[in-house]
Image 1 (tube, rainbow, N blue to C red):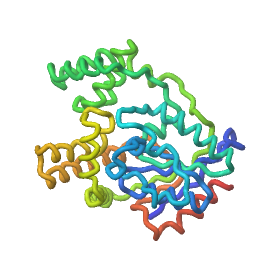
Image 2: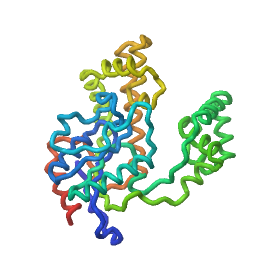
Image 3: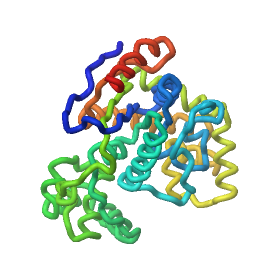
Image 4: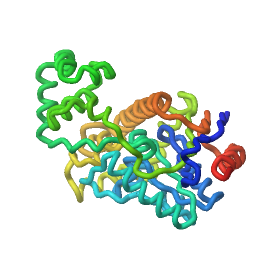
Length: 324
């Protein structure tokens, strides 16, 4: 089922370039749809997936292959080394430059990915919070480990009561983030988030979100990880670790990397590692769904995994939204 809505008629956006955004959780066919739109509308695909920015581990990150990209230009795919990091603001600045370049060439920019914070930074703007030193983060983790989640949450409430109301005492990642920002910058994270921000490029966004039912999504996550392993993800990771070695590199946050590394080190069987990776992927997809439902408005909602069968229904509506 495809649910369609008309695009914004905001008069302040008259005359600004149109950008198509294809978003949604992992494994639902976003890249395939983006390529079909690019072929139909003479577009260039711009990556908004934090994992697919990395040069290494293309199978494990599900980065489009050379065959997938044939005839269509792709930008911001595979442009980071394994030790590199990229904040949402940094990515948005790069994407803004690619959008401007694409428009200047007379083509349609098509931004595709499931990293919600990246898309928000591009479409709405985010304040660029200064980077947190590694030792500050380590100290925050040590405090939480020492006193436990409940006591840490109580301390966080005193330090940043606004942000504490938005998160659960069991949400380790977000509690650590709020604490470390307050510690490193001497200003609560909620204050940073309340600071006005402007998008890095003014554009009229036409968004398509692929959001299948949960059982379909979870099956797609499981199937794609099996497909990755079948294509050589384990060997890909083995070769990478033999050449790079360090497990604490940013690239190792990639879905499935830790689990398969545990198999390669002899800590887990391949079947157990794959099952753990599939579980982690499903949990990640669930968080993505929650984020998009609560934080992202769309012109077009596709309530199924993308397939060729619905292409002819989707493309004419996207074309009308962009060119009218």
